[in-house]
Image (cartoon, rainbow, N blue to C red; front, side):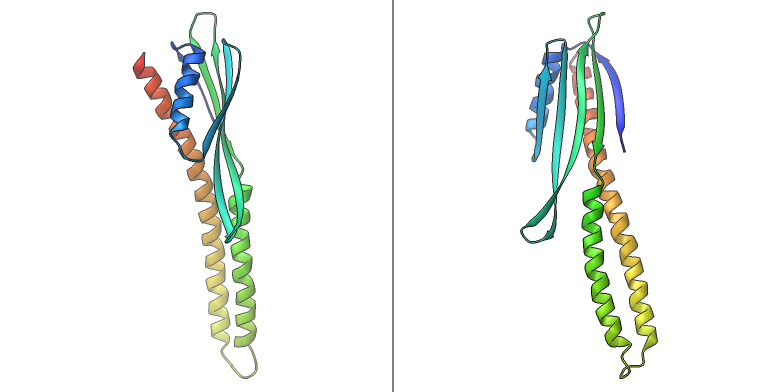
Length: 167
């Protein structure tokens, strides 16, 4: 999912960038990289989210806001930004957990379907629970991914409101 926006402001590009750097500095696990000249400054805001497969084994997902402040001929500043992120890590994290649950289900169902126990309905119940769990993990991964993108977009909307009300 990418969200993009363009906005005209009165604040000069360097001043807008300093205000953005202050806003990002207040956030945990966020950082900003900036560059460019006085009339055209570019920035990348990165948010890192850790997903733990097991204790001490993290996977890191990176969500970004890539944008620029550019001074146009009329003297106004244009803000352009794109919010993006990689959905691979949350979905892979969910897939690892689902695969562990699948292995446990196979082991349990082999025990349940052994000749000593004649409980076919228990195996069907376990399979049903697994299908619901797989769907729930997939939905959770999708909502998690969307939530982080919406958080970044909301951050930029709040920043724009602050800049516009200051002028």
